[in-house]
Length: 89
Image 1 (cartoon, helix red, strand yellow):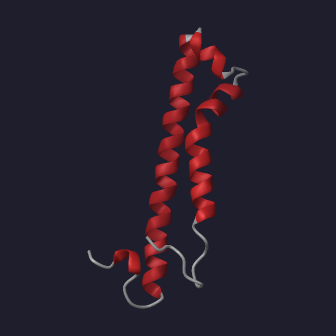
Image 2 (image 1 turned 135 degrees about the vertical axis):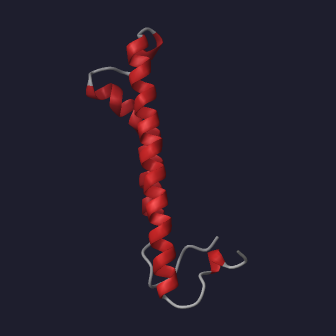
């Protein structure tokens, strides 16, 4: 899939941010209350907090991706023609 065009912003910084958000939110949720990953082994509440943080992070990441793809499609269309990554639909 081609996502680069001189008139469009780079897409990979967003992907880096999304991956970071998705994979660190559980740990951040624990750290906010002074807990570590080790605490989920012995504390059910720490385990629940970690899982909620993970789910929140993945939800946020999906929302970022959705918004970015819609925005990218609009920008690509405004460049004229049908974007390469949409051809064949």
